[in-house]
Length: 300
Image (cartoon, rainbow, N blue to C red; front, side, top):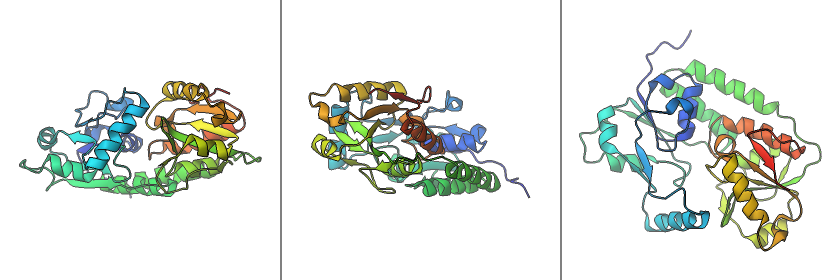
C-alpha cells in the first residue's frame, strides 16, 4: 500500500522543516517559508517571518540583543499573520526546541489572534527533536501529518542505517564544539551524539540537553585535542572567520595548541534535520585529519 492522500498546503516556519519536506518529496506543497529557509527549492516562496535581531551584527552584539529579549519576554521572531491567513495552509510546521533558533507555536498564535484565522482549520505541528532519535521521530511525524507516512518511514530507516555506518576513529580525541565564540557557547542537543558517533570524547555538553554558555577559563582548563567551530546557523566561510578570531585571541592557551577546525554548521550541525548524519561523517573525517571540501577546514 502506498501513500495516496493528496498533499496538504504547507507553511514551513523553520529551515530544518523545509529541508525535511523537500527530502520527503513535498517541495511543491510548500506554500510559504521562513526568512532563514535557504533550501534551493524554497527560493521565491512567500516569506512569513523576520527576526528582530540583526544577524549581520558582531556576535557579542547579537548575544546581548538575544539575552535582553529573552529577559524581557519578547519573541525573537515576528510572523506575518495577515499573509499566513491569506495563504490558508492546511499544515503549519514550527518547533519547540529553541526559542532563539526559530518560530515557536506561541509566536504564531500571537500573530493571528485578531484575524479571521486560518489556524483553527490548520494543523500546527511543532517539531521537538533534541537528539538524533528525536530528529528521526520528527521525520515520521512530519511525513504522517503530510500524508506520506510510508515515505517518511523509508527515509528514517535510510538515515538510521547511514548513521550506524559512520566509522569512528579509534584514538578517542577530546573534542570541544563551539556554537558561538563571543561569548563562547558549547554544543548541545544532538551535537554531543555526533561527536561520540565519530569516535570523539565530548568534553562539554550532554546529548539531548541545551547548548550553554562557558568561559575561556573553562575552555583552557578542559584542554581539548580538537576544537570545532560550528557557530549556530552559519556556513563554512563564516565559521572559518570566527575560528580565525579565536586563534587571534590575546590568550592563545584558549586553543591549547590542539587542532582547530571550522565546519558548515548550518548544513551539518545547527539544524534538527538529516544533515546531522552527514555532520557525523564530516566529524569522523576531520578527527582523522581529513578535510571535506566545502564542509570543513583545518586552521591549526
